[in-house]
Image (tube, rainbow, N blue to C red; front, top):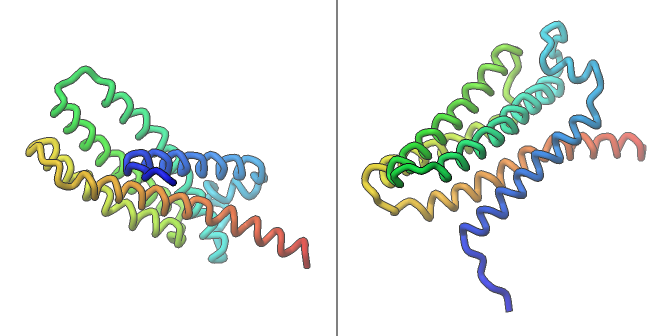
Length: 189
């Protein structure tokens, strides 16, 4: 007989899985990084001629922004939760800073793509599209929980976090898995 998993526990498990995916992709990047390939990400002297090159650069820009976002967001969240403040002020600060963090992620990705003159890859689009409802829920939670002390959207908030982390895990793993598959196909043929 299996015991039902609480939504909060499932949320934690999925988030830790997402963090593991980010670390695995970072390790993949470090292992496969070659001088000229890494320079393509940031050096404007390398013109992005093919769609594959643009997807490569776009994916890694998005990945690094996500990685930094998760590092910063987790530290801020833990600091706010541990702060010795009134619980309503803590809630307001928590949701406000989460909104700011997501918006900074979106602005960073857009700005870096503009600086590199690179089109968005499908992975970047998915990360963008999943972030818009997330920031909207954060704003609603700020109003409802921070000012009105209403818990109506907490279940939706938790389920959206599960969907976001699951989707971003797949997005983060998509490029390395496809590259590994392409290398495997070349070796077999």
